[in-house]
Length: 80
Image 1 (cartoon, rainbow, N blue to C red):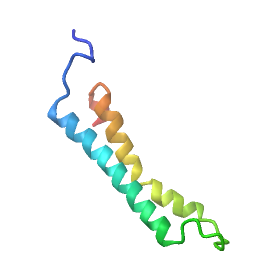
Image 2 (image 1 turned 90 degrees about the vertical axis):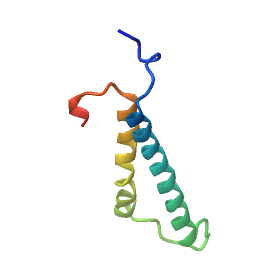
Image 3 (image 1 turned 30 degrees about the horizontal axis):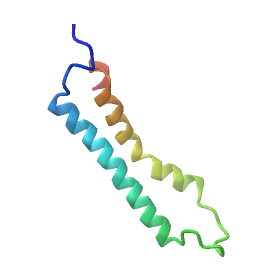
């Protein structure tokens, strides 16, 4: 049996990893743009963002993190 370090990644794993990483980068960019459009570091901004808004922003990031974790793990039927 080969160790994981010597086994090359399949194309499916590479695509899965790339979708996860690019998705996280896109979400981070979109949230940063939204933050700047809402005022950014405006000292006169008195209200803090809702916790519910933060939760709804983090929900799309969960599949991206899952894709990255699955691409690095040993593939089995329960991950599908």
